[in-house]
Length: 318
Image (cartoon, rainbow, N blue to C red; front, side, top):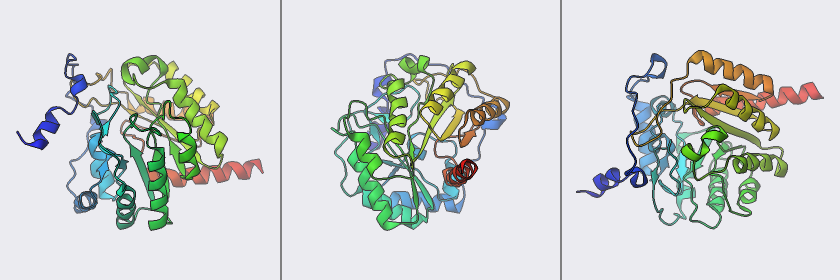
């Protein structure tokens, strides 16, 4: 058996003993996407391969990869492709990660420059094995991008840095334009969906970013279709606004394998529209709510909307 085949076979060893959950093979029309075939998609893929990078687009099996990579929008995933957490919704491999690559920040920066990105999203696996959870590595990636592509705005999607004293401060000091940390689901579902995380810790993380640097935009995201109730989603919106979060994304959960959390239901486009309307009414500057919405989907366009919304708000207040 080849190394690649072996890695694929044991991608989720921590889930191997679990019974299979039913997979809804037939998806509604609003969730169907075209296969990636464009030349620009393959060009983006080549840049990612040349620079030996990982992307959440591939590792998380994002349905929007064809559309985004056709626009040369790839979301970089740093610190390897093995996560120390075992969330039941996530397709990223779980296990014992390797050492950090000290040259990765420069490869990410060169790829950003080569792709000509005006806005880049950088995320990572959870690295509970590191003393700082990878905070310094995030800071180094931000600095390298600033040096190689100074006009590019930077959005980071971070882990929760649980029990990593001082880690958040290191990342905020690097001054990303957008700090994103996803709550993922409602508090009631955390034990089954996000067992290694703590809802109120994640909420406090977002609140603390604004306390340290109010100029940084903050962002968070939810998946729906996991078994949450609408009133619970509304409460999460209120919690995020209490933390002064600017930008909310809401998308449909899609089950990666039978070993992952089952889809409870497919939420309709009309329900997403209702969530969007409610979120704007609660005071979010920008809301992206649709079946195919993901954290970094249309992130460049949404960042322009975010800046414009803040300017309008400040002008109205002044």
